[in-house]
Image (cartoon, rainbow, N blue to C red; front, side, top):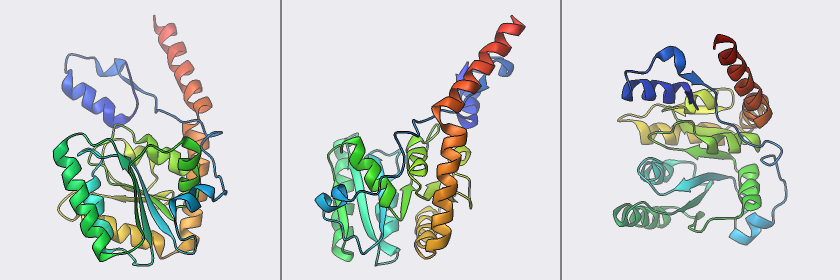
Length: 240
């Protein structure tokens, strides 16, 4: 059995204790880093109405409990007021979380300007442009098997602020390609502090973005994932 992260491997073994741990292997999921790469065009930003003189924090994901969107909406109230907030968020799981999101979005829009909600699914090229130009990508998930969206942001050269849950710490190198925030009582305040840290140091953010692109290509590009998968199959074949 192949798990997409060490965290997922532990979950599998916890759910299926009869499995032999020696037979459960890890090969991280990957992305196409020739597709997800920096795009410095700005037409997508202009269509959305972003102020290109101001930085923006970007979230891309579904409106679900797992993705932690309510935590993010409360956290960004307290970040640098110069920063815009872009929420590419749709497909709510339930009417209840949809209503909660709308109420929190309304409250956020009343206390700060430059908040943009895009409820529709954008074409991939537009998402890549948004990822490229973001001051940071934020992933407030309360659980992720791996967190591919963080890889997509890193491949576009963008620093990541993410929760330290599931497989995310296997993707985001804390302090090098972004910042990880423990999920706990101080989670929302921790998210705000981490976002402000990245927003407040453009040079450090640039270095994180460059390191993220390098890590995405070297460790999580499909060619690297394919090589690891082939090696595993070869090892298993030798043992057979």
